[in-house]
Length: 123
Image (cartoon, rainbow, N blue to C red):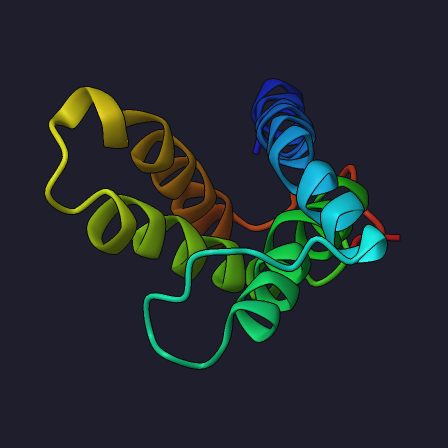
């Protein structure tokens, strides 16, 4: 593989995971502050859903940024973005679910390609 391929994979990991943190960190702050109101599409409880979402939008992207267990770390985020696009925004027009779909496809790509050589896993 060429070095531009590995730089491209690094940029994909850093940019999409970094942007995902902008969605996850406010949810983490809500969790820490006790603001536990959150959608519960599967009936497992708002608090449980919020905790799982924080894991998928904060912990997993941080692991992807450093390139640790990247393929495995992308799976929870893929599931979360699938739920956001097809369950939470299922009846909404495409413009409303577009962001979740972009993240979904980016993290599917990361899961398929792996971390590349600029990662903890490769060291």
